[in-house]
Image (cartoon, rainbow, N blue to C red; front, side, top):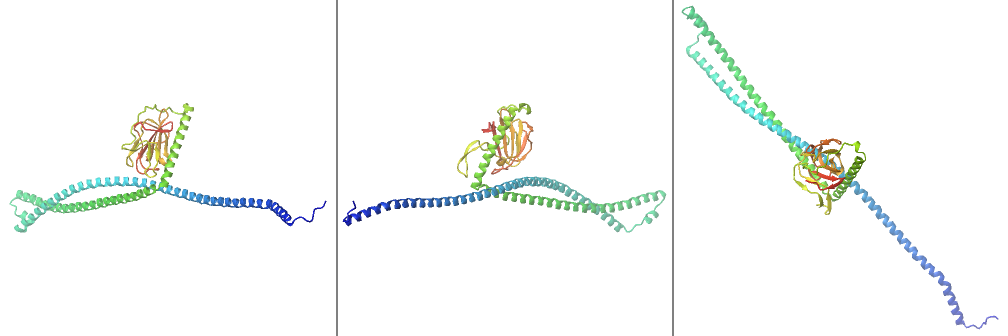
Length: 400
């Protein structure tokens, strides 16, 4: 049966509209869904690119900062070494100045004695001049008397011999008086010239020593000021603290490994002295910083101070706190010149920031023996002794 051709127009329009809606629906919905992921994918790519750019910038800045820190640290180490050298030169210059002052005082005492000798010589010279003057005056008043006149006036042979003897004595005295006068004059002139020359040499030497001390002191002051400016940098101080902690951990590991080796092979090592528990103070001076946690003055947070600081000047003697064997004696990171001594019972003592080391690894030392000198090497703000006591490598409070 064929469809009727008399279908109303409204029905046809509704059917066509429905068909269009059904046909268009599956096309428009997927298109909308596809557009949103495209936009999301594009914005995510932009964020990733931005993050990569920031990461690249931060990495570059990190590298620059690390390079700057290395430069500052190298400069600090160089200035610290130069400062230690200046301290040593200043100490030597002051010692030379003391020697010069002592020599000057001795020379001044000699000069005073020489001056007294001059006065006495001049007095003798004046006396000889007066005697000679009286002889000349007497000869002038009595008139010229010749040797022949005296001889011809003799009454007999005995008188002639007496007159001859007296005349020869007078002539000898006159000649001796003239020679003495001439010698005295020359002696006074020589002594006076020697005195003047000695004073000049001593004054020049003393002035040179004064200038040398002033120059070295000025150089040391400038270097110390520069070093303090470097150490006030917060970033550098953070790096220094990290380096000290790393060095402390490295020392702990080294000591632990050494104790393990000694326990595993006791026959290969000399027995360490028995640990008595008591320690003598390794340096003379007050304890300026104790063991334990303390607030850092610049960084503002608490950190462990693994030992005690003993205030003493550069060059002050450092002695072993107990009998033991030197395990390490050289430069050790932030500790600078450092000595580590092993004792019995897993105990060890550490002496840091030294200006000089007087012992070597493997050497036996006794209690109170000088092993080095106080300094400010490594990461130190000034001259002092950093002293640590460790049990099995771990820092403990020193029993002092």
